[in-house]
Length: 271
DNA sequence: ATGCGGACCTGTTAGC
DNA sequence: TGCTAACAGGTCCGCA
Image (cartoon, rainbow, N blue to C red):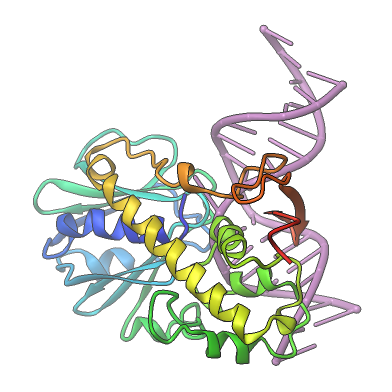
């Protein structure tokens, strides 16, 4: 589920139920996520109030007065508000129970996600400190991307999916943005012109912003209960459409693999 | 420094 | 219908 728009949608969805609430009890049913859930997390957050809920890349930052709980949803993670005491399913690995009788429940079948704790500035955490700019911020522009890419021989798709270059561009939106920009995924990053980087930056911003907007429409469902998103499906131009007709020129879309991820592109519109 | 492949783990789907 | 293999929204790590 979680690309950046999903994470942002999650943040907006749970924020009203979380910020200002005091943690009564942390329940960890399965600590073995990507990294073990820190032993000290319970004592750090129990009795404390969530002061803010921020996002950096795909990391959610729960600010307490003594530090920050960092949550990453990995490939299959999700967060929901449930009544405290609601029976836990197989993959409901942890609950943060608030004094108001509601709990924030972390679910993650594949357990690629993470729940971490850092005292002090979360942006100094090893996982966060060398992240690239936020894609929707003014820091992320064509000149930056162009300069950063000079000398890079790897595919442009891998380049924009590299979180040290820019955060939050996952496989789906990398494919979509490259299509909108008319750039072939396997083209060497260092060989993309400034002019085309402008198109690419605009495409990334547009595609992410639009997805967040559409995610917003599912907010109510999401917090309310089952929350299976499907919002982006209808507006995808290339992802998941290999062999089908290009929406612009009707050529048959081609699928290839870069790294171990599937890439879909139009052989005519993307060069 | 950069780039690549492997690893983590489970559920769903495609194919025989 | 049932079994097996391939694949899935992420990203860290070790090695060349």
